[in-house]
Length: 531
Image 1 (cartoon, rainbow, N blue to C red):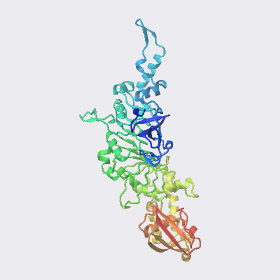
Image 2: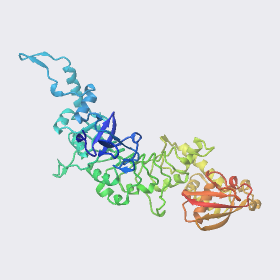
Image 3: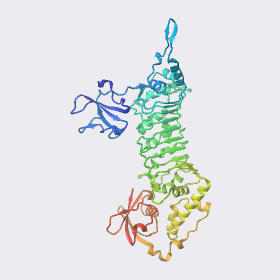
Protein backbone atom coordinates (compact mmCIF):
# COMPACT_ATOMS: atom_id res chain seq x y z
CA UNK A 1 0.00 0.00 0.00
CA UNK A 2 2.85 2.40 0.86
CA UNK A 3 4.52 1.66 -2.49
CA UNK A 4 2.58 4.39 -4.26
CA UNK A 5 4.06 7.03 -1.95
CA UNK A 6 7.57 8.49 -1.75
CA UNK A 7 9.40 10.85 0.60
CA UNK A 8 8.86 14.56 -0.20
CA UNK A 9 5.76 13.71 -2.23
CA UNK A 10 3.03 16.31 -2.04
CA UNK A 11 -0.42 14.93 -1.23
CA UNK A 12 -3.80 16.28 -0.21
CA UNK A 13 -6.43 14.92 2.16
CA UNK A 14 -9.85 16.58 2.07
CA UNK A 15 -8.15 19.53 0.31
CA UNK A 16 -5.61 19.93 3.15
CA UNK A 17 -2.09 19.89 1.72
CA UNK A 18 0.88 18.11 3.23
CA UNK A 19 4.31 16.71 2.37
CA UNK A 20 5.33 13.12 3.09
CA UNK A 21 8.47 13.21 5.23
CA UNK A 22 8.67 9.57 6.38
CA UNK A 23 7.46 6.14 5.25
CA UNK A 24 7.89 3.14 7.50
CA UNK A 25 7.15 1.56 10.88
CA UNK A 26 6.60 3.41 14.14
CA UNK A 27 7.76 1.72 17.34
CA UNK A 28 4.97 0.27 19.43
CA UNK A 29 2.52 0.07 16.52
CA UNK A 30 1.76 -2.42 13.79
CA UNK A 31 2.20 -1.86 10.07
CA UNK A 32 3.56 1.09 8.15
CA UNK A 33 2.84 4.79 8.57
CA UNK A 34 3.22 7.96 6.58
CA UNK A 35 4.85 10.79 8.50
CA UNK A 36 3.49 14.01 7.01
CA UNK A 37 4.10 17.71 7.52
CA UNK A 38 0.91 19.73 7.05
CA UNK A 39 1.00 23.06 5.25
CA UNK A 40 -1.43 24.30 7.90
CA UNK A 41 0.46 23.75 11.19
CA UNK A 42 -2.76 23.67 13.24
CA UNK A 43 -3.49 20.26 11.73
CA UNK A 44 -0.26 18.87 13.17
CA UNK A 45 0.22 17.09 16.49
CA UNK A 46 4.00 17.01 16.87
CA UNK A 47 7.28 17.75 15.08
CA UNK A 48 7.96 14.27 13.74
CA UNK A 49 8.47 12.26 16.90
CA UNK A 50 6.65 9.48 18.72
CA UNK A 51 7.35 8.17 22.22
CA UNK A 52 10.59 10.13 22.37
CA UNK A 53 11.95 8.89 19.03
CA UNK A 54 12.49 11.24 16.09
CA UNK A 55 11.25 10.00 12.71
CA UNK A 56 11.31 13.14 10.56
CA UNK A 57 11.86 16.89 10.72
CA UNK A 58 9.30 19.64 10.21
CA UNK A 59 10.12 23.07 8.80
CA UNK A 60 7.39 24.46 11.08
CA UNK A 61 7.15 23.22 14.67
CA UNK A 62 4.22 20.93 15.55
CA UNK A 63 3.07 20.61 11.94
CA UNK A 64 3.57 16.84 11.77
CA UNK A 65 1.40 13.77 12.25
CA UNK A 66 1.25 10.09 11.28
CA UNK A 67 -1.44 8.69 8.99
CA UNK A 68 -2.01 5.25 7.51
CA UNK A 69 -1.10 4.61 3.84
CA UNK A 70 -4.53 3.03 3.44
CA UNK A 71 -6.14 6.45 3.74
CA UNK A 72 -6.93 7.58 0.21
CA UNK A 73 -5.59 11.03 -0.74
CA UNK A 74 -7.41 13.44 -3.02
CA UNK A 75 -6.83 12.47 -6.67
CA UNK A 76 -4.08 14.65 -8.18
CA UNK A 77 -4.64 16.48 -11.47
CA UNK A 78 -2.47 17.68 -14.29
CA UNK A 79 -2.47 21.35 -15.23
CA UNK A 80 -4.82 20.94 -18.21
CA UNK A 81 -7.19 18.72 -16.22
CA UNK A 82 -7.44 21.39 -13.52
CA UNK A 83 -7.94 24.07 -16.16
CA UNK A 84 -10.87 22.19 -17.68
CA UNK A 85 -12.32 21.40 -14.28
CA UNK A 86 -12.27 25.07 -13.32
CA UNK A 87 -13.37 26.68 -16.56
CA UNK A 88 -15.44 24.15 -18.51
CA UNK A 89 -17.88 22.14 -16.41
CA UNK A 90 -16.53 21.69 -12.87
CA UNK A 91 -15.49 18.18 -13.84
CA UNK A 92 -12.56 16.73 -15.72
CA UNK A 93 -13.42 16.71 -19.41
CA UNK A 94 -11.74 14.42 -21.91
CA UNK A 95 -11.62 16.50 -25.08
CA UNK A 96 -10.72 13.46 -27.17
CA UNK A 97 -14.18 12.06 -26.39
CA UNK A 98 -15.98 15.19 -27.57
CA UNK A 99 -16.85 13.92 -31.06
CA UNK A 100 -20.31 13.86 -32.68
CA UNK A 101 -21.92 10.46 -33.27
CA UNK A 102 -21.98 9.42 -36.94
CA UNK A 103 -24.10 6.81 -38.74
CA UNK A 104 -23.57 6.02 -42.40
CA UNK A 105 -21.30 9.03 -42.80
CA UNK A 106 -23.91 11.42 -41.38
CA UNK A 107 -23.98 13.20 -38.02
CA UNK A 108 -27.00 11.87 -36.13
CA UNK A 109 -26.39 13.34 -32.66
CA UNK A 110 -24.47 16.41 -31.49
CA UNK A 111 -26.38 17.30 -28.33
CA UNK A 112 -24.27 19.41 -25.93
CA UNK A 113 -21.11 19.44 -28.04
CA UNK A 114 -21.63 22.97 -29.36
CA UNK A 115 -21.67 24.25 -25.79
CA UNK A 116 -18.47 22.35 -25.00
CA UNK A 117 -16.78 23.74 -28.10
CA UNK A 118 -17.76 27.27 -27.07
CA UNK A 119 -16.19 26.75 -23.66
CA UNK A 120 -13.05 25.33 -25.24
CA UNK A 121 -12.82 28.38 -27.47
CA UNK A 122 -13.11 30.58 -24.39
CA UNK A 123 -10.36 28.52 -22.77
CA UNK A 124 -8.10 29.44 -25.67
CA UNK A 125 -8.86 33.12 -25.07
CA UNK A 126 -8.20 33.21 -21.32
CA UNK A 127 -5.55 35.72 -20.25
CA UNK A 128 -5.85 35.45 -16.45
CA UNK A 129 -6.07 31.91 -15.06
CA UNK A 130 -6.59 31.00 -11.39
CA UNK A 131 -6.12 27.30 -10.69
CA UNK A 132 -4.81 27.63 -7.14
CA UNK A 133 -5.73 24.90 -4.66
CA UNK A 134 -6.83 22.34 -7.27
CA UNK A 135 -4.42 19.50 -6.37
CA UNK A 136 -2.26 19.96 -9.48
CA UNK A 137 0.71 17.62 -9.18
CA UNK A 138 2.35 17.66 -12.59
CA UNK A 139 2.54 19.23 -16.01
CA UNK A 140 1.15 18.08 -19.35
CA UNK A 141 3.02 17.88 -22.67
CA UNK A 142 4.05 21.34 -23.85
CA UNK A 143 2.08 20.97 -27.09
CA UNK A 144 -1.17 20.17 -25.24
CA UNK A 145 -0.83 23.17 -22.91
CA UNK A 146 -0.07 25.54 -25.79
CA UNK A 147 -3.00 24.20 -27.79
CA UNK A 148 -5.38 24.49 -24.83
CA UNK A 149 -4.62 28.00 -23.51
CA UNK A 150 -2.06 29.93 -25.59
CA UNK A 151 -3.10 33.44 -24.46
CA UNK A 152 -2.43 33.20 -20.70
CA UNK A 153 -0.57 36.23 -19.33
CA UNK A 154 -1.26 35.88 -15.58
CA UNK A 155 -1.21 32.43 -13.95
CA UNK A 156 -1.91 31.44 -10.34
CA UNK A 157 -0.62 27.95 -9.48
CA UNK A 158 -0.50 28.56 -5.73
CA UNK A 159 -1.16 25.91 -3.06
CA UNK A 160 -0.98 22.87 -5.28
CA UNK A 161 0.96 19.60 -5.13
CA UNK A 162 4.10 20.40 -7.11
CA UNK A 163 7.23 18.97 -5.52
CA UNK A 164 9.51 19.87 -8.43
CA UNK A 165 10.06 23.35 -9.85
CA UNK A 166 10.72 21.69 -13.21
CA UNK A 167 6.99 20.91 -13.57
CA UNK A 168 6.15 24.59 -13.18
CA UNK A 169 8.84 25.53 -15.71
CA UNK A 170 7.37 23.20 -18.35
CA UNK A 171 3.95 24.82 -17.92
CA UNK A 172 5.48 28.29 -18.27
CA UNK A 173 7.51 27.19 -21.29
CA UNK A 174 4.25 26.29 -23.04
CA UNK A 175 2.78 29.77 -22.44
CA UNK A 176 4.71 32.29 -24.56
CA UNK A 177 2.69 35.30 -23.38
CA UNK A 178 2.96 34.54 -19.64
CA UNK A 179 4.33 37.45 -17.59
CA UNK A 180 2.89 37.06 -14.07
CA UNK A 181 3.38 33.82 -12.10
CA UNK A 182 2.08 32.98 -8.62
CA UNK A 183 3.32 29.75 -7.03
CA UNK A 184 2.81 30.58 -3.35
CA UNK A 185 2.18 27.80 -0.87
CA UNK A 186 3.93 25.13 -2.91
CA UNK A 187 6.70 23.23 -1.08
CA UNK A 188 9.40 22.33 -3.58
CA UNK A 189 11.83 19.53 -2.73
CA UNK A 190 13.58 19.75 -6.11
CA UNK A 191 14.70 23.14 -7.42
CA UNK A 192 16.63 21.86 -10.43
CA UNK A 193 15.44 23.27 -13.75
CA UNK A 194 16.84 22.33 -17.15
CA UNK A 195 17.74 25.19 -19.48
CA UNK A 196 16.26 24.00 -22.78
CA UNK A 197 14.78 27.13 -24.35
CA UNK A 198 16.97 28.65 -27.05
CA UNK A 199 17.26 32.42 -26.79
CA UNK A 200 17.81 34.87 -29.64
CA UNK A 201 21.51 35.15 -28.79
CA UNK A 202 21.94 31.38 -29.04
CA UNK A 203 22.20 30.76 -25.28
CA UNK A 204 19.81 28.46 -23.44
CA UNK A 205 17.16 29.74 -21.05
CA UNK A 206 14.02 28.43 -19.36
CA UNK A 207 10.29 28.96 -19.44
CA UNK A 208 10.81 31.59 -16.74
CA UNK A 209 12.75 33.96 -19.00
CA UNK A 210 9.85 36.34 -19.67
CA UNK A 211 8.27 36.38 -16.20
CA UNK A 212 8.18 39.95 -14.84
CA UNK A 213 6.13 39.35 -11.66
CA UNK A 214 6.75 36.41 -9.30
CA UNK A 215 4.88 35.54 -6.10
CA UNK A 216 6.62 33.06 -3.77
CA UNK A 217 4.65 33.53 -0.55
CA UNK A 218 4.70 30.78 2.08
CA UNK A 219 7.06 28.48 0.20
CA UNK A 220 9.38 28.42 3.25
CA UNK A 221 12.40 28.71 0.97
CA UNK A 222 15.62 29.89 2.59
CA UNK A 223 17.83 32.54 1.02
CA UNK A 224 20.25 29.79 0.02
CA UNK A 225 17.42 28.11 -1.91
CA UNK A 226 16.15 31.41 -3.30
CA UNK A 227 19.65 32.07 -4.57
CA UNK A 228 19.22 29.02 -6.82
CA UNK A 229 15.76 29.96 -8.08
CA UNK A 230 15.83 33.71 -8.65
CA UNK A 231 18.59 33.75 -11.31
CA UNK A 232 16.17 31.77 -13.50
CA UNK A 233 14.02 34.93 -13.79
CA UNK A 234 16.16 37.46 -15.70
CA UNK A 235 13.22 39.76 -16.53
CA UNK A 236 11.83 40.03 -13.00
CA UNK A 237 10.45 43.42 -11.92
CA UNK A 238 8.14 42.49 -9.01
CA UNK A 239 9.05 39.90 -6.35
CA UNK A 240 6.89 38.78 -3.41
CA UNK A 241 8.67 36.78 -0.67
CA UNK A 242 6.11 37.24 2.11
CA UNK A 243 5.33 34.61 4.77
CA UNK A 244 8.66 32.80 4.44
CA UNK A 245 9.98 33.26 8.01
CA UNK A 246 12.91 35.31 6.72
CA UNK A 247 14.78 37.25 9.41
CA UNK A 248 17.36 38.92 7.17
CA UNK A 249 19.14 38.95 3.84
CA UNK A 250 22.43 37.27 4.82
CA UNK A 251 25.54 39.27 4.01
CA UNK A 252 27.03 36.42 2.00
CA UNK A 253 23.88 36.51 -0.15
CA UNK A 254 23.95 40.29 -0.23
CA UNK A 255 27.42 40.31 -1.76
CA UNK A 256 26.10 38.63 -4.92
CA UNK A 257 22.48 39.80 -4.75
CA UNK A 258 22.84 42.17 -7.68
CA UNK A 259 25.46 40.42 -9.76
CA UNK A 260 24.14 36.84 -9.68
CA UNK A 261 20.78 36.48 -7.90
CA UNK A 262 18.40 39.33 -8.67
CA UNK A 263 18.08 41.23 -11.89
CA UNK A 264 18.76 44.99 -11.67
CA UNK A 265 15.35 45.41 -13.34
CA UNK A 266 13.59 44.72 -10.01
CA UNK A 267 11.37 47.66 -8.99
CA UNK A 268 9.22 46.16 -6.20
CA UNK A 269 10.17 43.86 -3.31
CA UNK A 270 7.57 42.53 -0.88
CA UNK A 271 8.80 40.99 2.40
CA UNK A 272 5.62 41.17 4.47
CA UNK A 273 4.77 38.80 7.35
CA UNK A 274 8.33 37.62 7.86
CA UNK A 275 10.55 37.88 10.96
CA UNK A 276 12.46 41.08 10.26
CA UNK A 277 13.30 43.15 13.36
CA UNK A 278 15.32 46.03 11.92
CA UNK A 279 16.05 47.79 8.64
CA UNK A 280 19.74 46.89 8.74
CA UNK A 281 18.84 43.21 8.27
CA UNK A 282 17.83 43.86 4.65
CA UNK A 283 20.60 46.32 3.83
CA UNK A 284 21.74 44.35 0.73
CA UNK A 285 18.43 45.27 -0.93
CA UNK A 286 19.57 48.90 -0.95
CA UNK A 287 22.01 47.94 -3.72
CA UNK A 288 19.19 47.22 -6.18
CA UNK A 289 19.52 50.22 -8.52
CA UNK A 290 15.88 50.41 -9.65
CA UNK A 291 14.08 49.30 -6.50
CA UNK A 292 11.29 51.82 -5.92
CA UNK A 293 8.74 50.01 -3.74
CA UNK A 294 9.62 48.23 -0.48
CA UNK A 295 6.80 46.51 1.45
CA UNK A 296 7.69 45.42 5.00
CA UNK A 297 4.29 45.30 6.71
CA UNK A 298 3.50 42.86 9.54
CA UNK A 299 7.05 42.06 10.59
CA UNK A 300 8.58 42.86 14.00
CA UNK A 301 10.60 45.91 12.97
CA UNK A 302 11.40 48.22 15.89
CA UNK A 303 14.65 49.93 14.89
CA UNK A 304 16.92 50.93 12.04
CA UNK A 305 19.98 49.12 13.37
CA UNK A 306 20.26 45.65 14.88
CA UNK A 307 21.66 45.05 18.39
CA UNK A 308 25.08 44.02 17.05
CA UNK A 309 25.35 46.65 14.31
CA UNK A 310 27.70 49.60 14.30
CA UNK A 311 25.40 52.68 14.37
CA UNK A 312 27.97 54.51 12.27
CA UNK A 313 27.43 52.08 9.39
CA UNK A 314 25.58 53.98 6.66
CA UNK A 315 22.15 52.61 5.79
CA UNK A 316 20.79 54.35 2.74
CA UNK A 317 17.90 53.22 0.54
CA UNK A 318 18.24 56.15 -1.82
CA UNK A 319 16.01 54.80 -4.60
CA UNK A 320 12.91 53.86 -2.58
CA UNK A 321 9.82 55.93 -3.41
CA UNK A 322 7.18 53.97 -1.46
CA UNK A 323 7.71 52.32 1.93
CA UNK A 324 5.21 50.25 3.94
CA UNK A 325 6.06 49.75 7.63
CA UNK A 326 2.53 49.21 8.94
CA UNK A 327 1.75 46.61 11.64
CA UNK A 328 5.29 46.49 13.04
CA UNK A 329 6.80 47.24 16.48
CA UNK A 330 8.07 50.80 15.97
CA UNK A 331 8.17 52.26 19.50
CA UNK A 332 8.55 56.03 19.11
CA UNK A 333 8.53 59.02 16.79
CA UNK A 334 12.33 58.96 16.70
CA UNK A 335 11.99 56.24 14.08
CA UNK A 336 10.03 58.71 11.93
CA UNK A 337 12.94 61.14 12.17
CA UNK A 338 15.28 58.39 10.99
CA UNK A 339 13.21 57.69 7.86
CA UNK A 340 14.28 61.06 6.44
CA UNK A 341 17.96 60.15 6.52
CA UNK A 342 17.76 56.46 5.61
CA UNK A 343 15.01 56.77 2.96
CA UNK A 344 15.66 60.32 1.71
CA UNK A 345 13.54 60.15 -1.46
CA UNK A 346 10.44 58.41 -0.13
CA UNK A 347 7.27 59.98 -1.50
CA UNK A 348 4.72 57.57 -0.02
CA UNK A 349 4.71 56.00 3.45
CA UNK A 350 2.41 53.69 5.36
CA UNK A 351 3.18 53.35 9.07
CA UNK A 352 -0.17 52.73 10.80
CA UNK A 353 -0.70 50.19 13.60
CA UNK A 354 2.61 50.67 15.41
CA UNK A 355 3.16 51.15 19.17
CA UNK A 356 4.34 54.74 18.69
CA UNK A 357 0.68 55.70 18.15
CA UNK A 358 -0.59 53.83 21.21
CA UNK A 359 -0.04 56.76 23.58
CA UNK A 360 -2.91 57.43 25.99
CA UNK A 361 -4.62 60.71 25.18
CA UNK A 362 -3.13 61.04 21.69
CA UNK A 363 -5.84 61.34 19.08
CA UNK A 364 -5.53 60.31 15.45
CA UNK A 365 -5.37 63.94 14.26
CA UNK A 366 -2.50 64.77 16.60
CA UNK A 367 -0.64 61.59 15.63
CA UNK A 368 -1.07 62.45 11.96
CA UNK A 369 0.23 66.01 12.43
CA UNK A 370 3.25 64.89 14.45
CA UNK A 371 4.09 62.36 11.75
CA UNK A 372 3.70 64.81 8.86
CA UNK A 373 5.69 67.46 10.74
CA UNK A 374 8.63 65.10 11.20
CA UNK A 375 8.69 63.80 7.60
CA UNK A 376 10.50 65.78 4.93
CA UNK A 377 8.58 67.66 2.26
CA UNK A 378 9.10 64.93 -0.37
CA UNK A 379 6.56 62.69 1.39
CA UNK A 380 3.26 63.47 -0.30
CA UNK A 381 1.27 60.35 0.60
CA UNK A 382 0.85 59.14 4.18
CA UNK A 383 -1.25 56.08 5.01
CA UNK A 384 -3.03 56.29 1.63
CA UNK A 385 -3.91 59.97 2.20
CA UNK A 386 -2.48 62.79 0.10
CA UNK A 387 -0.78 65.50 2.18
CA UNK A 388 -1.97 68.91 0.97
CA UNK A 389 0.21 72.02 1.15
CA UNK A 390 -2.02 73.54 3.83
CA UNK A 391 -2.05 70.32 5.83
CA UNK A 392 1.74 70.14 5.79
CA UNK A 393 2.04 73.78 6.85
CA UNK A 394 -0.34 73.25 9.77
CA UNK A 395 1.45 70.06 10.83
CA UNK A 396 4.90 71.66 10.73
CA UNK A 397 3.73 74.68 12.74
CA UNK A 398 2.14 72.37 15.31
CA UNK A 399 5.32 70.30 15.51
CA UNK A 400 7.42 73.46 15.94
CA UNK A 401 5.16 74.49 18.80
CA UNK A 402 5.64 71.12 20.48
CA UNK A 403 9.42 71.46 20.22
CA UNK A 404 9.28 74.99 21.63
CA UNK A 405 7.25 73.72 24.56
CA UNK A 406 9.88 71.07 25.29
CA UNK A 407 12.56 73.77 25.18
CA UNK A 408 10.57 75.94 27.56
CA UNK A 409 10.77 73.19 30.15
CA UNK A 410 14.58 73.25 30.35
CA UNK A 411 17.24 75.89 30.84
CA UNK A 412 19.13 77.33 27.90
CA UNK A 413 22.42 75.72 26.96
CA UNK A 414 23.29 72.05 26.77
CA UNK A 415 19.81 70.85 27.70
CA UNK A 416 18.25 72.90 24.92
CA UNK A 417 20.83 71.59 22.44
CA UNK A 418 19.91 68.07 23.48
CA UNK A 419 16.28 68.71 22.54
CA UNK A 420 17.31 70.17 19.18
CA UNK A 421 19.30 67.01 18.47
CA UNK A 422 16.17 64.95 19.08
CA UNK A 423 14.32 66.93 16.39
CA UNK A 424 16.49 66.95 13.24
CA UNK A 425 14.04 69.14 11.27
CA UNK A 426 14.21 72.01 13.81
CA UNK A 427 16.54 74.27 11.82
CA UNK A 428 14.81 73.46 8.53
CA UNK A 429 11.37 74.26 9.95
CA UNK A 430 12.58 77.43 11.67
CA UNK A 431 13.95 78.61 8.33
CA UNK A 432 10.64 77.83 6.60
CA UNK A 433 8.21 79.18 9.20
CA UNK A 434 10.27 81.32 11.56
CA UNK A 435 11.65 80.38 14.95
CA UNK A 436 8.90 80.07 17.56
CA UNK A 437 9.06 82.01 20.81
CA UNK A 438 10.32 79.90 23.69
CA UNK A 439 8.64 81.54 26.69
CA UNK A 440 10.46 80.16 29.68
CA UNK A 441 8.85 82.72 31.98
CA UNK A 442 5.71 80.63 31.85
CA UNK A 443 7.37 77.25 32.17
CA UNK A 444 10.64 77.59 34.02
CA UNK A 445 11.14 79.95 36.90
CA UNK A 446 14.89 80.41 37.04
CA UNK A 447 14.79 81.07 40.78
CA UNK A 448 12.93 77.85 41.43
CA UNK A 449 14.90 75.77 38.95
CA UNK A 450 16.92 74.22 41.74
CA UNK A 451 13.76 73.04 43.43
CA UNK A 452 12.73 71.32 40.19
CA UNK A 453 15.93 69.31 39.86
CA UNK A 454 16.34 65.76 41.06
CA UNK A 455 19.50 63.74 41.61
CA UNK A 456 19.39 60.59 39.50
CA UNK A 457 21.95 57.83 39.75
CA UNK A 458 21.96 56.18 36.32
CA UNK A 459 23.18 52.57 36.46
CA UNK A 460 24.11 50.61 33.34
CA UNK A 461 25.83 47.26 33.77
CA UNK A 462 28.56 48.03 36.32
CA UNK A 463 28.81 51.72 35.50
CA UNK A 464 27.13 54.43 37.60
CA UNK A 465 26.72 58.15 36.80
CA UNK A 466 24.92 60.81 38.89
CA UNK A 467 23.30 63.84 37.26
CA UNK A 468 20.87 66.59 38.27
CA UNK A 469 17.88 66.35 35.94
CA UNK A 470 14.86 68.72 35.61
CA UNK A 471 11.65 67.03 36.67
CA UNK A 472 9.84 68.59 33.72
CA UNK A 473 11.90 66.55 31.26
CA UNK A 474 9.96 63.95 29.27
CA UNK A 475 10.92 60.28 29.29
CA UNK A 476 11.89 60.63 25.63
CA UNK A 477 14.33 63.44 26.45
CA UNK A 478 15.66 61.45 29.40
CA UNK A 479 16.51 58.57 27.06
CA UNK A 480 18.43 61.04 24.93
CA UNK A 481 20.55 61.98 27.96
CA UNK A 482 21.16 58.29 28.68
CA UNK A 483 22.40 57.88 25.12
CA UNK A 484 25.07 60.50 25.85
CA UNK A 485 26.07 59.08 29.24
CA UNK A 486 26.40 55.45 28.15
CA UNK A 487 27.24 53.56 24.94
CA UNK A 488 23.59 52.65 24.32
CA UNK A 489 21.00 53.52 21.71
CA UNK A 490 18.16 55.65 23.08
CA UNK A 491 15.62 53.96 20.80
CA UNK A 492 16.40 50.56 22.31
CA UNK A 493 16.69 51.59 25.96
CA UNK A 494 14.33 50.67 28.79
CA UNK A 495 14.44 52.86 31.92
CA UNK A 496 13.40 51.47 35.29
CA UNK A 497 13.15 53.80 38.29
CA UNK A 498 13.75 52.64 41.88
CA UNK A 499 12.06 54.66 44.64
CA UNK A 500 13.31 53.91 48.17
CA UNK A 501 13.01 50.16 48.68
CA UNK A 502 9.99 49.74 46.43
CA UNK A 503 9.95 47.58 43.34
CA UNK A 504 11.17 49.10 40.11
CA UNK A 505 8.79 50.89 37.76
CA UNK A 506 9.38 50.97 34.01
CA UNK A 507 9.03 54.37 32.33
CA UNK A 508 6.84 53.24 29.44
CA UNK A 509 5.18 56.44 28.22
CA UNK A 510 7.78 58.53 26.40
CA UNK A 511 5.60 61.66 26.42
CA UNK A 512 5.12 61.74 30.20
CA UNK A 513 7.25 64.03 32.33
CA UNK A 514 9.72 62.67 34.83
CA UNK A 515 7.85 64.34 37.70
CA UNK A 516 4.96 61.89 37.22
CA UNK A 517 7.26 59.05 38.22
CA UNK A 518 9.54 60.62 40.87
CA UNK A 519 6.74 62.33 42.85
CA UNK A 520 8.35 64.31 45.73
CA UNK A 521 11.62 62.39 45.85
CA UNK A 522 14.91 64.31 45.72
CA UNK A 523 17.10 61.35 44.80
CA UNK A 524 16.32 58.19 42.82
CA UNK A 525 18.15 55.36 41.11
CA UNK A 526 17.54 54.68 37.42
CA UNK A 527 18.39 51.31 35.84
CA UNK A 528 19.35 51.58 32.17
CA UNK A 529 18.67 48.40 30.21
CA UNK A 530 19.44 47.82 26.54
CA UNK A 531 16.40 46.17 24.94
